[in-house]
Length: 219
Image (cartoon, one colour):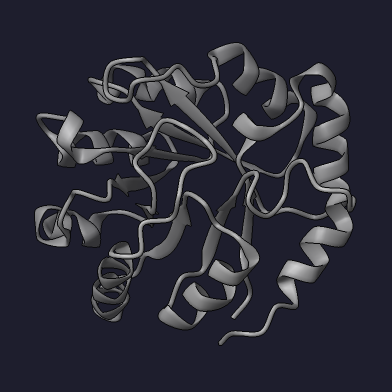
């Protein structure tokens, strides 16, 4: 299975963001992952609109937006107009998630939902046939450097079974190390949001790291 590699740009070196994007482009990553937080839905502030615009301007690769915010529907048009290719939101933050999904798709953007560790598959199951991507949070969202929550694996297995009936791509986000990539690939995960556990802050260059990750065997 071809692994979808998505650098979590919250973990990039913002002192030299242009160099970071150029190096990641050269490493042939697949999707730039942009976390937008409001300090309410999660207890932190993530990247801002200007960060998104800058990265969007510097790459021709796909760029997604992960809206960890209240009332995400109010920002769909904004990020669509700014060039987002994929927009994730958390259904529990939205009174009318099906309407928000329709709005994302009407703007020519791929819709995705993000599922927190404490959110059950049953809660979001009615939406699975409406979205292109399902992002499974394997840590509680808001901060980098947390410990992987192993109980989420049961949710991954459950979603992999449901994917056979509906057409969506499964990605994971949170403490994704090389060992987790090998383990989760065999469970059916296709895409990996990579931060400090596997990509950023390492001695190797991004191209070497990404090539080695793509060649990791499934265990």
